[in-house]
Length: 321
Image 1 (cartoon, rainbow, N blue to C red):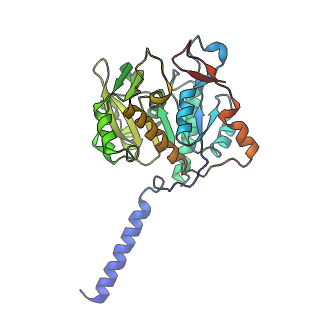
Image 2 (image 1 turned 90 degrees about the horizontal axis):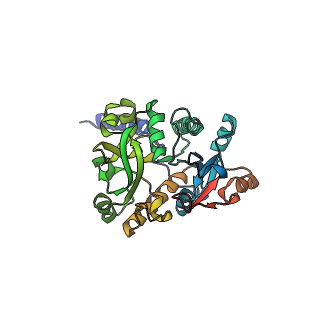
Image 3 (image 1 turned 120 degrees about the vertical axis):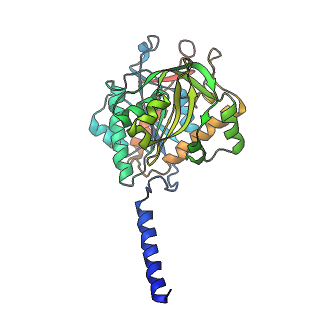
């Protein structure tokens, strides 16, 4: 081949490579740059009669401690604000958590506000403005409803049971588990390290047959329900920093009711720690911030006092709003 031909080929290869790189999603590959992240936690509707005298919405303190243990501060987000106010909050926080609980995933205020933030997060990430979302238990279920546009949940009861995870091939190349030592990955598949407290879930069959879900999420783990249903237990967005677990990593370190199967082994604690650090590190990639330090201070969870709730709930402490 002549020098001229070689030069032309090299240029073409460079252009192809450059175009290919530009076409790949870059939103997931940003470096950690924000060492003062604030993660928003959407408050949950009170449904338990014993809790109703204390407030309309709540956040179990275990979620707050979980996020704080990863190196972030927490901002509680109420369900009574306007869309404009949520848009303003979005510009200031560095990630969002949908917690577990009990609410209608299509018509409740919890679902309505979650949808506002979900749409904001989609648009932001598409524009190169990194913003992660995490869903736990019903929070993960809500993520599937938001992505699919419909509620596809069925009976996949795994109530008060700790389980190992059936990891998929995609789990081993996932972002969520990439920081796990090999020993911990092995333990995750052999030991009951994940606390499950749900009645409904998404079956693997439904997930795989739904084009919207299967194209949006990577399936990282599955489990078997009490009735034998094969359900989705861990999800990760393919092109968005959105994550979901049907189980509860926060209980491994921060809930202690002896009547409930909260995993407290060394490996269970390590799993909880690794995932908290992982999601907070995702939040570090967001450059959103408060412009007013006083507003920032008044918006954080530190302005609220948790209530001891161990004598009437499964939680040790609860923040009510």
